[in-house]
Length: 261
Image (cartoon, rainbow, N blue to C red; front, side, top):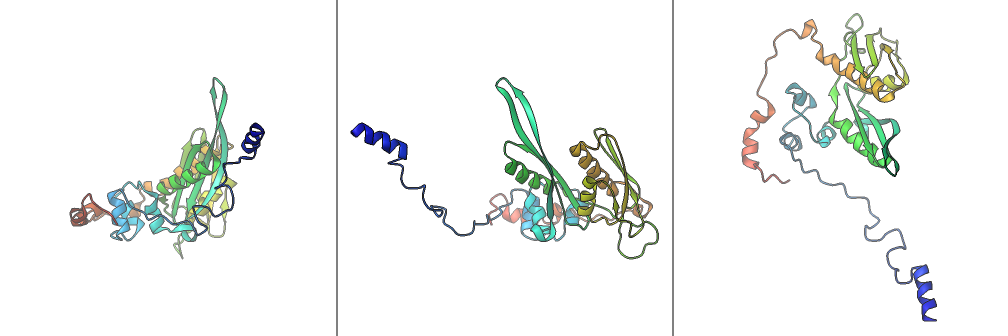
C-alpha cells in the first residue's frame, strides 16, 4: 500500500506542489521593470548626462561606441530607429556525436534619415541571436552621406557619387539617380537603402548575390564609403575644437571612478 502511494505520488508529482499553478507567481503580473542604464564607458557617461547633444559630435571625433544604449539615447526606440531581420540561417559544426546546429541572424537598423547599422550574431537559439544582432547593429550605426543627381534643389535624395562595396565575391555599385526614380535594387540592398534614407538610386551587382550575408555586407560597405570619399566640397580645412573627452575633463575629475547615477 505505502509503496503504491509513493509511486502514485512520484508519478503525479505529489510533494512538488507549489510553484506550478497560476501565471502570477513570484515575478508578479505587472509590467517588466525597465532596467536603469549605468554607463561603463566615458562616452556613455557624457551621453547619459546630456553633455553630448548630437550623434554627429561622436562621429566628428571618431569616438568608438561600445554601448548600444548610446545610440538609443539619440535615436530612441521604434519611433526613430527601426530594425528588420534580414535572414536567419542555420550553420552547422561537425562534432564526434553528429552536428551542432546554431542560428545566424542578420539584422539591419536605421532611422530612414541618414543613419544605418548592420549586425550579425550566431547563437544556439533564434531569439538570442536576433536580440544580440540588434545590439550589434546599433553599435555599428554609421552616418550615410546623401547628395543630388543634378541641380541642388530641395533635400538631398540620392548617393553623392558612384560608390562601390565588396564582400566575398559580391560587388555592388550604387549610382546616383534623378528624383522620382525610386530604388532600383534587389530586395536585400533595397531595404538597407530605405533604412539609410536614400530615396533614389541605381544599383548594379556582381558575384554570388544569393549569399545574403555577403550581399548585405557589401551594400553596407558601399554606404559607408559615401563619407569616406573626399569630394571637392569637403576640401576646406576643418577647424577642430576640443574633443568631448578634453572638453568635459572636469566632469570626469569630479565624478572619477565612483560614477553611479
